[in-house]
Image (tube, rainbow, N blue to C red):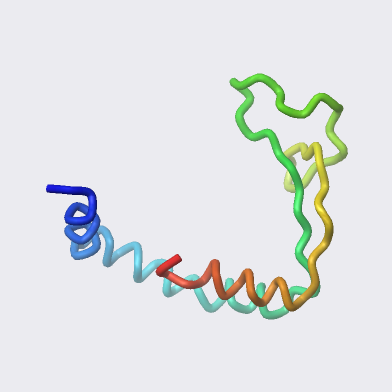
Length: 92
């Protein structure tokens, strides 16, 4: 069985169907978050503590208790809507 066949087999499995139903049930709440977003903020994190630090400087701050080392440019509400559509698309 090649990789494509394995994916197709998994997508017809009960596990896949359960994951799809769970995704669909959470979709409405996530859609509301993206629809109401006025901006998107981006941060650079180092999540793996067992790897050498990739950022030479001290953390700039924390988001949800996780230190961030870089900060990207804020994006507008239009970007948030496009990001939401991508994230909520089950095929992406």
